[in-house]
Amino acid sequence: MAGRHVWWGAAAVAAAALAWSTSFSVTKLALERTPPLTVGALRFGLAALLLAVAVRLQRRWRPPSVRERLEMALAGLLGITLYFTLENFGVDLATASDATLIVASYPALTFALEFALFRQRPAPLALLGMALAVGGVVLIVRDNADAAGSQRLLGDLLLALGGLAWAAYNLLLAARRPRMSALTATYYQTFGGAVAFAALALTEYRDWGGLAPVDIGLMAYLAGVCSIGGFLCYNKGLRSISSSTAVTILNTIPVFGLVSAVVVAGESVTRIQLIGGAVVVLGVVLSLRRDVSRDDGAPKTVDRAPKT
Image 1 (tube, rainbow, N blue to C red):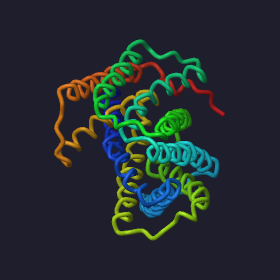
Image 2: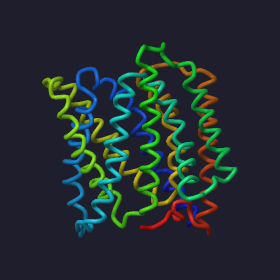
Image 3: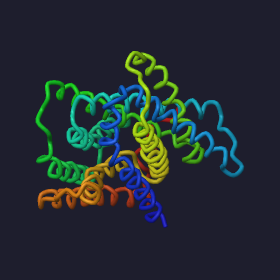
Image 4: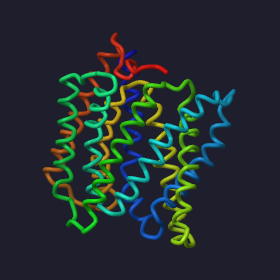
């Protein structure tokens, strides 16, 4: 039963990866007519409004304590405002292929932070799984990168810095283990992130214009599928698996993106891409085997974090 609990958590994070696999391309379309901070404010503002209704429909729902709400708002500043600010500017300056490849380095950042903060050395099997997952992502995207632009290096740097924000978000959320439903946790994170985004978006008021129907549709998709659906599944999964394993599963995003490109855009798939997808899956499975063994007796990595 313990092992099954871990695999259900892994499935929830994989569902988040599926939802997020289209985020880069949809964001790129939205950025054609809307500035980056405004995209974040509209996306997460709409998501917060929808979640405000959904969270109150829960049976016997009561607001968590002020401290718990503040903790979730802080997590939202890291995982929503800071991360997506860096991502939006990074995608705007660089390419979707660059973003996909750089996201593959996030597990390494999470492992490094875990060791630096908690003196928790990753197991050899976990390191092998991470290396395989990253190697598979490289195989998938290496032939798809666009020609470099003058601002591409800056965009890549912003995306890399986003990995630090994302790793900090993972460790904070997993270490605190919020005593509330995933829906409630997602709502307060989204609300905190949206408020901060709204304040930042005021700096772009000179670039504001009217929203066309297609822009409204893009924002609705980003809010409903990528934000609400993705973060709900991700928060749910973090209750069962470690933060580093969860981020490793996000390496399946290029795989899901490849499948959607074939089904929706009719693109062809090379043998190298297929091999890369298989290597990614193998790396994720190896990482999950570590958590299954820990769930049978030993404490998880995040449980060794100091409690304040």
